Length: 81
Image 1 (cartoon, helix red, strand yellow):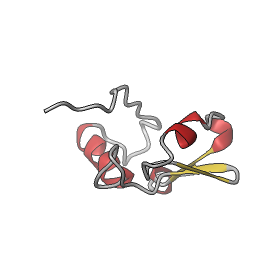
Image 2 (cartoon, helix red, strand yellow):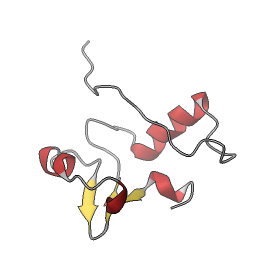
Image 3 (spheres, one colour):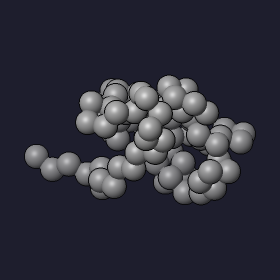
């Protein structure tokens, strides 16, 4: 899907691994539905939703002009305070 629709879902065929949808099923940030993954937001990973998280990435990287098609977040997702 094209931006900004691509921040809400991705084709399962692009990343054919459902492990996170099983392991993190109680966290509302990724669901496997039919032939795609859907990112509803919420849960502990994206408390303001996946869209807000991607907007934060967009403040650092220009995602609007199409020159960058993929942003990879390699963080572990665990925060200690």
